[in-house]
Amino acid sequence: MEDAQSFRLIAKLDIEDIPLNNVNGQNIVYWEDIQPVFPGVKYVKNGKVAVTMMRDSDENIIKPDRIKHCPNVVLEVVLSTTVQHVHVDPPISTTNPGFESTVLHQLGGIYDQGHTTQDIVKQVLKGVQEANDRLILIQSKTEAILTRNYELLEYTIPRLFIVLPEESTPWDPKTMLRTKFRLHFICECGEHSEASGSKIPHHLHLANHEGYVVNKPTEFFKKYGPFLMLMLEMIKVGTSIAGHVVPALASLKVVDILDSAQSTIDSVTSKVVEGVDYSLKYLEECRTLIQKSDGVDIDGNVMMSQQDLDTYFAGVEGLEGVDLRQLGSYLSASGSDNLLGNLYRMTTKDGHVKWVCRHHYRAGYQEAHTQKLRDVVQLVSLKVTLKSSFAAAELYEAIRKAKAGVYDLDIAFGWDCSRTDLEALDKALKMSSVSILRLDLRMFEASIASKLLSTSTRYEILVRIMEHPNMKTIHIVLSKDFMKLPSLQPKRLTHFRKLSIELTPRASDFRVIVKSLKTNNPLTILNLENNSIGNDGALALSEALKTNTTLTTLNLQRNSIEKEGALALSEALKTNTTLTTLNLKNNSIGKEGALALTNVSKTSGCTIVT
Image 1 (cartoon, rainbow, N blue to C red):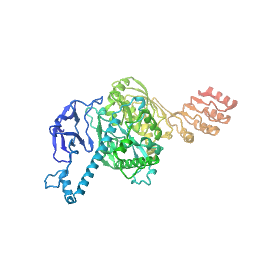
Image 2 (cartoon, one colour; image 1 turned 120 degrees about the vertical axis):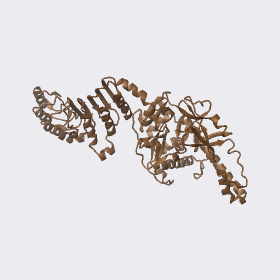
Image 3 (cartoon, rainbow, N blue to C red; image 1 turned 30 degrees about the horizontal axis):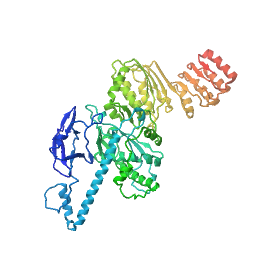
Image 4 (tube, one colour; image 1 turned 90 degrees about the vertical axis):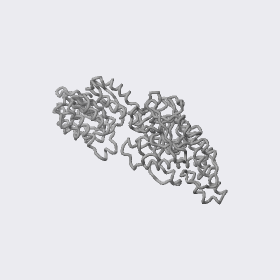
């Protein structure tokens, strides 16, 4: 563990180590310890980013002045006289290996040009000053954005985001308007999410998500252009403000593909690095085009002056609630109230709303919520509708750790859940006391990848759940993506008291369903309402029912079934002994069809609704 922070004067090589102080478990350096070592210190930098004084939860500078420890980094000290007192003398012989000797040695060869050398140095200093001024402006604007707090109702969408091109292509102003962009949200982790003993980095980073396609890009960039430029600059050069740390893009490990969400925190793809530069050039060009369309005479080849920047960023202090709500209209996105772009909306202990990724949510917020869930799952019976994979993870963790344990679980997946969510449920149930399970999967959505790679895996997971030895009763409501009912037949059913499956298929899957009914699969409830199967469909179902011994409930409302179909169904019920409910409301079966069904219901034990 480090016990000192390393410093050096800007453009110097000599390093000075200043001892750290541990305050409330956090390593810091007092400003009063820096001043004797570097008299006249104005501020210190981490790369291109100024290191700011630490602030409390009310954004007041903590006294005495202090900065946060930056491990494995040499901070550069800027003196109050560094820029103001620059004087160029004729080059002299020196053995000093510092930056000045290198520059002066290079200038020595052209010193006899006299005035030309002075002009070169002035231009260099002017460029440095302009770059510093630009950085300070961006820093101040970024600080205003990061320190702004929102009420829960106006913070319905993550407030930090950038845009990146969908494809990595070389910059070409002639083709820029054909570029398609995706919006990527940023995880708002920081000191507020950093729990004691946390081993993962807590700096702002792009969410592990494919991003959202930007609709109406011209209108979008005109509205959010200044904000986007600030966010892109922040990602590129890095910053450290009010408990938020953003490492400079160049300091992150560059990889070809991110293998996991953990890699997202520590690494960045080359596509992102190139995309940030591309997006900045695009925004600069857009600004030029917009100003020209407004009649402003501007040279697009010249970098924005400080005055231009001041004007462009005027009023950018963070997006208003209405701006955030309107943002959704530009995106091809869908998400729950608390989940968007793989970020989860949480409220900190200070009452501030933050959107964070799963890693930082679990690190900083989960324990309190999990304890509440543990209190709930002490009940022997629990009915719950989950709205996201985050909520599901919390529940599973609570069920596993509950002392008494839930044995009767009625759980509905209320979001577009996937195969991964089923696998998580399977693991949780193995470690639980659940023996009675009702599982509603109507919102299940097979991903493109799972459809291409394997259509059987999701069935295998459900079969594994059915085969858990502690399971006695299971009722599963399937989505339309589960049509291969024979694949849901467990091999071991000796431990079961009851297994039932409910399904509402698509009209296009009718033939598949009829075929599966002849195989005596676990399907017990079949809802075919409003599928327009007609008499032909009723005849096909009748043949399947003559051999089926598992289906108990069949809903055929609004299916254009007439007398012929009703008579066929009545004949099937003479041999079928398991169907207990048949709903034929809103069909035109006629008096003869109704009479035939009424007569057969008296002997078959099936309740028929017409």
